[in-house]
Image (cartoon, rainbow, N blue to C red; front, side):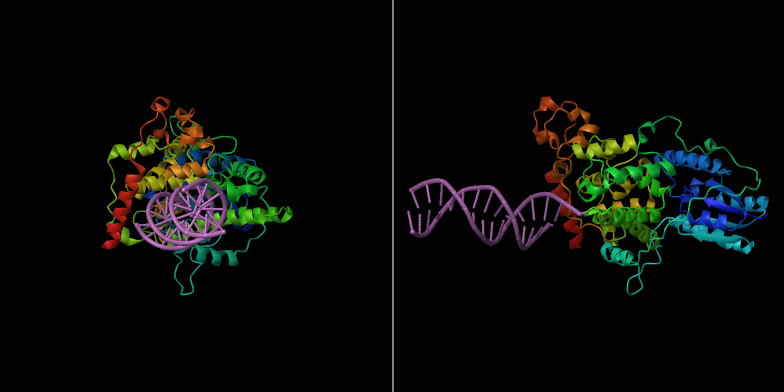
Length: 474
DNA sequence: TGAAATGTTGGGGCG
DNA sequence: ACGCCCCAACATTTC
């Protein structure tokens, strides 16, 4: 019986996994591998928070493979060397993987593909992560899109969702190889349990956890998604970002399932809600589109005009107060503390803290991007880069720089009952809603445990606008 | 997927 | 009855 390798990377699932399905269909013995090679992602080696999630996700995938007569084999070390050795040991004629799109991984995978083909190995790669491949969507003149709306119009009209293939039951046997290590030997899990707040009933790594989160979202959040998605105090978002990052759920299967649900349940307006969520998945695709076509953007402004912008990198204590949630601005601190404690932050609050860092504090968006990279379990190079450049105003389809969020009015508008702020900034619990988002106007005795604002909002806004005016005047 | 300043309108109080 | 002022509510412009 001939053999093949399935190289798992960011597709940690069995359902709707094109590489795995094709490998099973090939009728070969299958060696299922995961290789931990963080330096190959340089300069964006996976951050500590996402490695915690990854550990649990790999554990779950290994378990569900074991219940199907297979296993996931773990390796440390260089991917190309490891795979060439395994191909030789297993006598494999073919390898299957789902594509990655980060610049360093695209380079690595292309070089490997060339090398393996020269050795006579059949290389099969698939789209297992996106609604559309980044190169499939082009403007009329054949260039990449740089603006979301026309990009999405094009994607939406050509979006074709297929019914997912059935979940593989028993898998073919594995060939014997040497050098596999236990999952623990990948050292993904933190030595100290600082990640204990990351996991809860509705945030569980792995395919089953993603599935449970989706069921819960469809039951509780979908019907009011359009209105509720901006309210961090509610539970109206899917909470699927980490699962999408690691491929614990297929984005195509997700969209398919939501449309199916809307068509089966003739509730007025439900299809509109689904369209809004799928549009957010479109933003995710758009981020990958931009990263693929503009691979320098994780470390450089997409709009080169901003190269002359006088962003500072410090002073260090200011950045640190932002990181620790001690800025004295309640909605900002709530967000930064949510991030630190749970490895997640609500999207609306991500925009608020990013605006505050890049505009009111005048700190470079890359300092924020780095912090998110290390602390988010869903840290994703495409989304993170695009999100920060969007917020900073330096991106292709960014918000104009002069759109500066007022964190007080944002707090009053999107957390009117203060549930979110009170949850993460408990020292403000006793303040009435009227002053919760601007505690500095409340009597001093009622807020002795909470810092004074790091900056004056009105003044720092004016300074940001004048820096911007200067940039435009050049 | 803003905020703040500025402009416009129209109702009501009041001399 | 009429004009004037105030100001809230909304619209537009500007950053």
